[in-house]
Length: 179
Image (cartoon, rainbow, N blue to C red):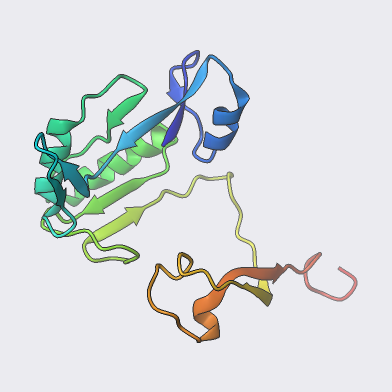
């Protein structure tokens, strides 16, 4: 889900969705951008679980079943490449457009809930001057018992599996006495 500004004809910075949804501004609205299809219901009402289907086949079906409505419902742009220079070019284009980055997916990969890697990689550019590196120390944690927090996987009693938030501390000044 992204927010779109009709006046500027641009997607607004990532993270603005809630503000746009609640503001009621007629020049800004949410736009659903589909990038994958995990379940599909056919004309007979049969529901198909596509998570174990290869990404390329899911993507082809997504492009057939989604009827885009410009800036309201779109299918995320996609390309197949084996060239690092093409990926670099796309990343530079994303940076020029102030986009969040790229997701690289192996066309033969399957979908795994709560999994990292498995043929999917997120590449985010670093924007000069927009962020700075900060050092924090974890000084505490808040614990939850929600199965949703753990991805619905069992009932672990390991404290690390039940952390819902960390409490952080930052040093004020330059870290030297009197500084």
